Length: 164
Image (cartoon, rainbow, N blue to C red):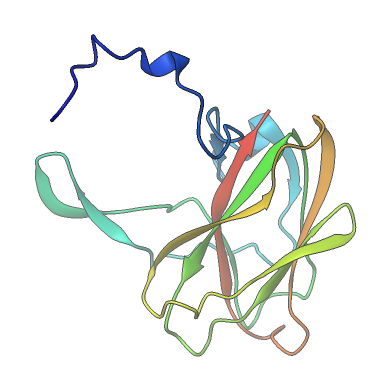
């Protein structure tokens, strides 16, 4: 049985797992200058092979996350560096079955927080992973670099979700 919204005050219900991401904002190449200080390093290309989706009544597929940062086999070894003020951070990256894709390591204030493997699922789409949440609101230094041995492979950062 469905309960009409007028009977339940959804705003008063506490999130069962937490509400760290209720006010998440998205950062890509377009929004980067407004919200963060970024040096793209070897992640200076744009990936055109992205997930597509039909939107609203348009049956033609529309590419998603086109304003991304791409590391290719020919890219420099310089890391992607971002300084951003936030309390929570999510990495949105490309999953792919391509053997050309490599693993990227994500560091927050010099501490490795995760390894992002784009080949886990094996088909082209986006994947979101939590870097951190529920931290003090301050400026964090983020670095993304290719895992040792994968420096000549590819990796795409579609963007970042962050909470101020």
